[in-house]
Amino acid sequence: MAVLIELGYKLGVLEALKASSITKRYAQHTALDNVDLAIPQGSIYGLLGPNGAGKTTFIRIVNQIINADKGHIWINGEPLNASHIAMIGYLPEERGLYKKMKVGEQLVYLGQLRDLSRKEAINRSRHWCKKLGIYEWWNKKVEDLSKGMAQKIQFISTVLNEPKLIILDEPFSGFDPVNADLIKDEILELRANGSTIIFSTHRMESVEELCDHIALINKSKKILEGTKKEIKNSYKSNTYTVEHRGILNGALDSPYQVVEQTALEDDFHKSIIKISNGTGPNDLLQNLISATEVHAFVEKVPSINDIFIAKVKGGGENE
Image (tube, rainbow, N blue to C red; front, top):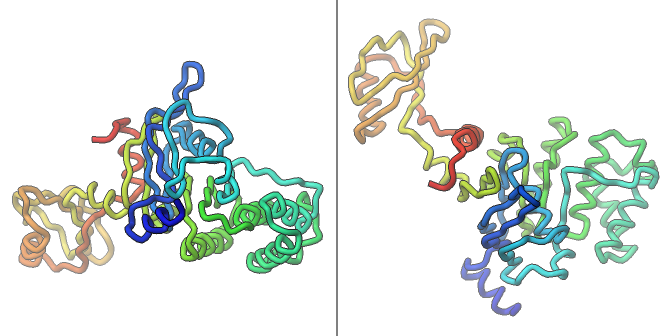
């Protein structure tokens, strides 16, 4: 099996995690309805959705906290089983630390629970505390820490045993911008070192910065999945943002539609222009140059936040 898995990685065949037809019901409520996901090895995979969509249920099934009613999950090509728990690092949205324990004691204890020797747990804990700038709190009780510092301790406990699959549920909660950037850098380094990261958040700007692939779950169903680039390109509307001097005043005829025009400073304006009938951007630009003084010209690509809102408000499934 190990040889087949290694061969699968070389051929690009296997995912770090594959889910097929995952379904979970609670009495009259369906939390997940036949959800399929394919999470590439070595990726940062954004698991997105509004509150109550089913994201946390899926994460709990992967962590074997609860069982699916139907469907299968494979980790590195193997059916999900108890041995996989040791290779998964899980940072839940609901944090849990022993407030009366000292920082160092707690990290060493949690490291030993993940099969590290005491010496190894001490060395790794000290390394991470120094790396995240909290080593001076080694002998302080957790209850004396700020929310941001406690969050760093929770993050360290998640990655202490160098898990190959890391699940981060709202990892930036409680962080100021400086420390949020610090954790972003650590997430990118973890990926560079071979970990696969499932990243669940409502902060779409973090998804834009970090994620390679995304999936959107809404009302228990997967309604979108793919690389971030592919998904954004699929939602482009052939619309361009142009900064120019003066007002266009009907200078552009069909197939060009000025959707919006905003006054800037010194007689400059910003126009949103949509193209129809298959005309390309070069044609638009030539027409603009004939009609006005162009200072900026860029395609308007929807953000992940735009797509998220459109799909969730639309309530549609895969189209």
